[in-house]
Length: 361
Image: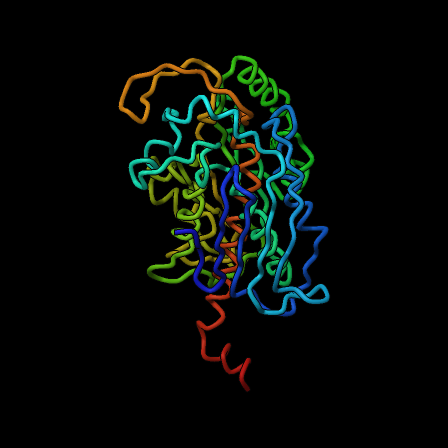
């Protein structure tokens, strides 16, 4: 499946080394101001080209093909396209018959019986540029309700912050960091670790923190579209993500109910161990998520694998790859959370009779 969402449905298409990447966002309300400068800035944050990311430099200039007239959304499907201008498919010619370890090569081949060896085809993280554009559009809708989503890097490998108590100012500051570091005291250590792994031809994993502010109480459905399950589903569907935590996350299994419960007062919740979600529904507190990326599987060391004939082989990879996919991946996580919240916002619009009467009377 290439789509996500219930009311706000996002569908993407395209391959890493094909003509380009595109998407369609349907169910988007009419009358939203489409701020192109903002959308371009979102795409720019995801771009490669720095010494901490892939050397592949794509312009990532995109065009909105439909759904906008005189700067406003029309209610029609928003279609957009990003051409691939800097592909080097020949970098993959030597491994066209080899399954790269920790990639989707083997599983795609077994499932479809075909092999697009040019950078992984549909399984490449190149597709995530479409998610960022769609997420940017979702943010423009959320902006109308003062809802904000921000993400940053908690750390890479063992260089990791123990705290998740970062405020909005820290997230805004992290956007100007080359590695989107939330903890400024760890930024230089994070950079050093990434560059050292890159020098060795190796890679690192990363942990991302995402927070959503001003989310109203009531988003998420009681059973099969719980807000936490929707968030976990789309985030786990992002390339390289191996774990998602909400609120206290795994630490909740190591404590007692008397410590885990968020006590309520007239002024609000005393703590936010739930991560802003109770019973699959937002409780009005901040949404708090942690996402953990595996190390980039594309490394430049000798590796053992199999080829399409089932023979054992050893090989060294060539090409242009991120030493830590989690850094740019944090931008995509932010976009995906925005898409889920916008979808949940639209789903919640019909939860009460008085809401419908407000529209039709």
